[in-house]
Image: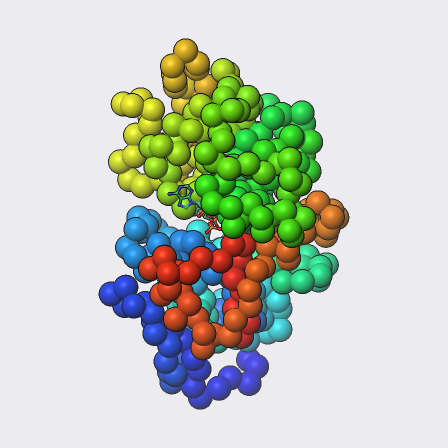
Length: 352
Ligand SMILES: NC(=O)c1ccc[n+]([C@@H]2O[C@H](COP(=O)([O-])OP(=O)(O)OC[C@H]3O[C@@H](n4cnc5c(N)ncnc54)[C@H](OP(=O)(O)O)[C@@H]3O)[C@@H](O)[C@H]2O)c1
């Protein structure tokens, strides 16, 4: 056990309001089945803002996501865990709901040995490389691409025309990976801010970015279309379906909610996404497959670390960071983001 304090700072999300407070360090929570992580930095995820607004369906088995993108150091590892003090780790929020928020100086994760092995992921020395980046959102992309290739059948994305709706963090990471795998990528985004950010950060070339409003000029052009905005409105899904070529695949990655059906009366896209299914659908004169991806596994983090270490030029993930703040600035900023009063492209990082 490293030197632990008598008090620490943590956030609370209660009735749509985020606050910061000093708490007594809970020594009684240091059990045999506990890992405590001293956080070093965190990412703000779109899901954090959605949970403040109550616009995200929280799965019972995983619990809320609020404060899940973190990198830190193990500072306590119970005797029934396989961790050691001082290990650099990150977190997989898809395993156990029994944990505290990452928006804090310390995070407490409880679980069986097997659960902890999946939920707390060791960061290899070479894994992070230059600059801070968030392993979890990248692991979800690595997972989604694997799932697409597994469900859809094409062994590779090489030469595939890939259209991505949304130039948020998810859309940009998908573009990096698809391009690395040999796809031709085109990213459509509603607003100019994220398109400019992607070009200025040299994540996308000018010819790879377009306004979502121009999507009509690319009808039926893409073998694979990925839907990755905050919300998958019927209009966005119509646009994505319009982009998909006859016989192609439309991967729903973000923004669906329970009960969403698309196209009219045909497929329960929220279930397709969360249960990672594939279904054939008709759209006008076309037929294509709808598919989805949700969450990730420890192996996806490990593949993400390997990809980034072996191909740093293909995965400039640190360039997604657009702003860095302290924990004391977090409640006001996240409340503004949730209210739509401010919007940062890329990833906002909190350094602790
Ligand atoms: N399947 C999974 O495992 C998984 C994992 C992580 C995240 N996600 C989901 O992926 C989604 C995107 O996450 P992110 O990190 O990329 O978020 P982000 O960085 O905040 O980007 C949000 C994106 O959504 C777009 N958008 C929001 N409202 C829109 C609307 N009404 N019409 C058109 N575009 C709209 C934004 O476009 P503007 O620039 O025009 O605002 C932006 O491109 C979220 O829903 C998240 O929950 C899924």
